[in-house]
Image (tube, rainbow, N blue to C red; front, side, top):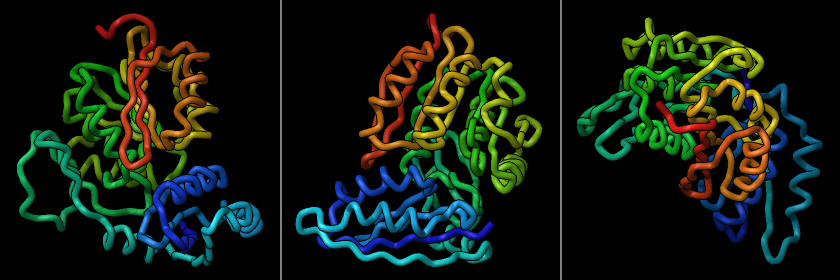
Length: 286
């Protein structure tokens, strides 16, 4: 799959301004972002890209106060996308509890869990803020013998970690992108939990008749708002639903939709403007 890289130069550059722009770009829908002062870089599959929509959106940011923006769009062929992941991929260490690393990372400190993810096109190598937030939330959960599904699994980081934490078998990993499903299968085998994870291609409709103690969804605001009622139906009584992939400013919309779907808000956390929210279905977890 080819991707388009949108590079926006912001002068003067501020993270607050860049995050406002990210919140708007998510709707187009761009999938991942990086901040490299003075640039905001955003990535979207080529078939989903609309130059006219980007121009229209960015024109709304031009002339706001003294901030000036310039932008360009570049095609990133599949082979170069993989190289981009590797060049920017740094290991992630969450306390002493978990590290996410590639095969080329050496000399890292010991942690209770290790997840090896070699860079691929699929979203979810662990270094994005939302993936880190999801890892931290998962580590704080009672996972042993619990039925778990990772919705929008990307490279399989969360499903692999859940399997290593002793989740009931099989852990389900779901993604609409065939590249992601293949990557999750490959990475589960690499982490020696391939027999513990069932990777499936599809959208949320696949899970609407299933039941889980723990549902993980690190996708984006629009998909979560569309599918949250399905997540709620799939959660067992006392089950947890952990959501990320959206900015802190989107929490109120997520909270309203979750409560309408019958989920009780527990708490949230944030990292560099990104949010994770934890909900519960009914009574206490068993």
